Image (cartoon, rainbow, N blue to C red; front, side):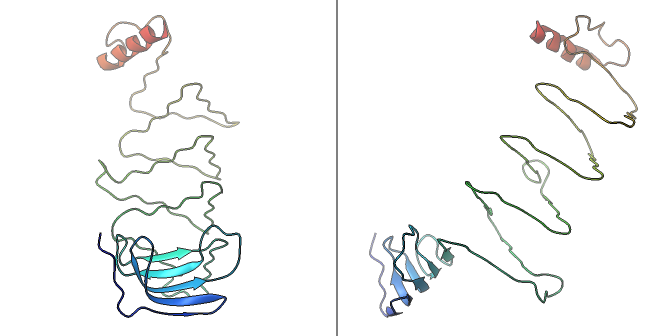
Length: 202
């Protein structure tokens, strides 16, 4: 790879910081403008703001803050907006591998838009527990709603448990008697699934 040239490189430095124009980094990427703090410290990361002009991340803004990165805004919102982060393409990653992420607001909306096949999905995954606490919880599905557990599913309430359905089939997965095919309101596929569960439990 040819070395990146900077024909009018310039910089201004004090003992505390510096401004760089046309600075070429060790990875051969050129920064159009960079603002960097210079101070003796035990930080492993540099302290800077840079506008990248060339290289793989051309057109990017790179920030590094070894301590706290704080943004305060919204004293006078415009059209009700105090902050906007729009990604025309690609993903947005927010990570805190050794910390906690907190979202707090009057209202929080999580919306996923897509074709409902490969996109438009929401995944909530946890190595531990998932807790949901609210005065009123409602789940609605246009197609199917499934609850599954390797152990026990418990419904506990001091009030009523109501089940309203056009067709209700109750089956014991580990029961010894799965009945005859299509018996009662059970379809043949449901009966076959009961047989498979019986065999796997033996």
